[in-house]
Length: 453
Image (cartoon, rainbow, N blue to C red):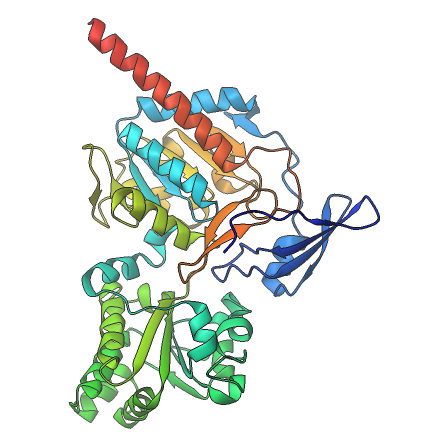
């Protein structure tokens, strides 16, 4: 894979630009085959993008206001960087949160800042696929790339996931429709199963839809594990606990055993319901069990464009994927104690830096109230409830549209970004590098003063 960014093709008119193989960073599919047409510094066409991708590209206007606000008033970016560094250095228990909608390069610097200030670094994974991250550490993951799914997968199971609405090109580019090396007829060579508590749009594309009892995921997965190992559970218990007849699970297990390459994609319908990480552990263990019979893999259907990159970068730097505390000079991982929504809800954090996220729109009431009481910095391309209440707010350029860099697809494959437009605003990377530089200077001055004393 090339790591260089090829120049965009210039059309005969100076105001027209064509960007080949642009990358859509709206969702975890990170489709990198988009052709953008740019006229007069505005994207007017996005070929091959899905409905969500078209909205991402075509509705991009960019923030027209100042790049930096301090206490709600316009200020130079350099002054905002200094103020942000002062807030973080003076804090006793700062937290850095978000990171899922920015480049890996910016994420790397954010982790460095957390290390310098002895703070906590956390990503949006903690409120979506955090239980999966915990389960991976306990059970392991039998995995593959989306390219392998495209070329080999003949049984595709979606559990607690609705890609028809959340990842519109998932079916057509990776999992169901495309013709592959070992599935030359595409959809005709595949069987699709959807397991969910309600009939979603994805269920319409399924050959078999299994509607389970809400909160019955763990019991359903352990039923399948028992069948995979040759045990037959009590039919009445299975019906009461899962809401589905045992014969249905037996039929599904027979399909799974006969598959040549089975794939399970799972979503927040599994990870954020009763059982959480235990649900994910059961699914990962089932996938491991199935490899006694045939080739089987599983993958989480990740939402944000670079949330997978955030997990990778934080894990590189600390050994853990999210919710990492660095206050003792070494990383400690304990979800529930060091995850941001819990830190704020308990009133423990005394400063925060929010990068490419909007906790004021989705955290609990108690967490939002505490965030509003403490000084915090926010970096975001758009005005949000979080940026409006920030002590220092930076309006930054949009990654993938204005900013180059690296992102990770949901299958852990790195993709390079090919920006289409320039932006008057700095990138997240530039702002974070400036904050890190100021933090190091302030810490150096503090140490010098301590030595003199």
